[in-house]
Image (cartoon, rainbow, N blue to C red):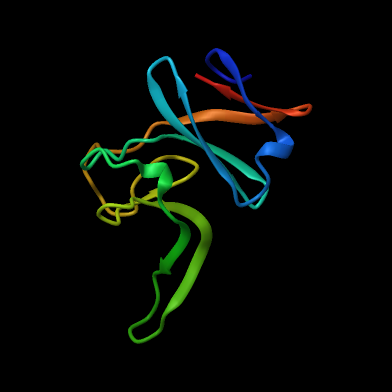
Amino acid sequence: MPKGTPHVVATVGELPPGSRKIVEIDGRSIGVLNVDGRLHALMNNCPHHGAPLCEGVVKGTMEDSAPHEYSYGRHDEYLVCPWHGYEFRLDTGRPLLDMGRLRVRVYDVRAEGDHIVLYV
């Protein structure tokens, strides 16, 4: 069961795969992203310097590998801050690099019938 108050933020047709929508709920800017059919919702504020995080690129990253071997993976699992390039996991809000206790708040979001419902 999702936590928080439900808010209908879009119809399923308004948020097809590859799209995003920034919504304002109770004074909070939240980005809702549809990445390959998976819905994600994150606070639209980078903890580093307050950039509009959800305007950044969704991408994967380099994986651990042997010297001189390069392996790209985790496709479409990270959101990149448009100002300084910090990378945050879409599912947890945790940064790729250790930033101490800094991370991005994530919210429950799901398709319920024909609506996208965000729980805040």
